[in-house]
Length: 472
Ligand SMILES: Cc1cc2nc3c(=O)[nH]c(=O)nc-3n(C[C@H](O)[C@H](O)[C@H](O)COP(=O)(O)OP(=O)(O)OC[C@H]3O[C@@H](n4cnc5c(N)ncnc54)[C@H](O)[C@@H]3O)c2cc1C
Image (cartoon, rainbow, N blue to C red; front, side, top):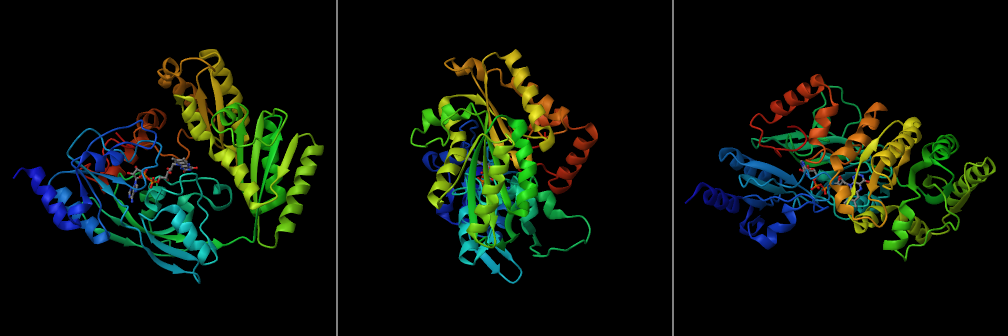
């Protein structure tokens, strides 16, 4: 029996025959990323059912010198969960680690396994009259483990923070199969270095996260959405400051949509109605939650809208009249990514700069791109409240998108040099994966890279955890 066959047979003995996938049709979805940009292969896809099985799989992989590619819902946007072409790898899928272990409403915490789908966690929290606030368009299929490994952000970071802020403890299996039980649901714990924060955002390069203790929050009584048309991004940044002052912690989301996104939505999603008849440079989607009642929230929001219209910061606005109306407004925001995909090849950037620098960054990037690629469409949108824009660049309307897409490296450099000039980040919430690994190295100092490599080799001395991702 070859070594590979022996490993497969031992894996089947460990997790069960039908949880080791090797056939083409069964493995295909695991070997390609969500955007269909990255493709790979592996010896098998292994689906352990619990932490002990994960430990056993990791020990087997170590014994046979196999690398491990952790995968949750496979919705990541940086190619982090896709194996490379090297067949001496196993994809370890966490889909069967899907239990809610404990909900503690007195402590406002929930302990879940890493394969739990984000939406399931939100539902469980709601059933217990609590809120788990992480919210993003892939929530129906992404997993808590993937959210942790990429430090996911989404639409409520402004109020609740990203996955780092929502996590109290972790359980992790190390590359040699040991189990670290750090599932401490504590809000105060200053006992030295914070290991969990190293695993969060490590994109599967340090170990397998098998469970997490997460924060819960009181469920708001009312939830109100408004959409506003603005003359430019400068007014949008002003409005953000005013909304923060007027609405305080009730302001949970502050999203922007640039004008070039609108025709893409109208073309690819004609059923979604854009609420404004006159054109505008920027639309803001705002969400306010309230722990008193809806009338109070509506009054606050309408007063802000009125003041901003009088000041000329806002041209037009609509406050959702019902849950369905609010969902329609959110659908516009959440369909942009898909509409851009349907439009054809485009060059994506997931950047952040301080909110105070966003308008200047966008103006400079648009100017630089108009020189380098006349007619290119900068169709940006995203989480202005966090200074995070998905600054996506499409080929000139009607032009063949492929020659434009081939200029990706040049366009990336123009955009990312400006981001770094404003002391921003070239990956605000999607992680580095394969997509941004080398660019990250270009922008980080030699000292920072050396420290990061030391962390990697301390946790994964044999370099078997998700090779080729995050760090070269
Ligand atoms: C339509 C759409 C909208 C999105 N919107 C947002 C958004 O608003 N904000 C945002 O932050 N992200 C967004 N994302 C990307 C986001 O990173 C993912 O949706 C999600 O966090 C990844 O979870 P996943 O389970 O799919 O992880 P995967 O894609 O399976 O994996 C992502 C990374 O995590 C690693 N990993 C997965 N599970 C584990 C584990 N248990 N232990 C160790 N490593 C692990 C993988 O190796 C890989 O490196 C969006 C994606 C899509 C498709």
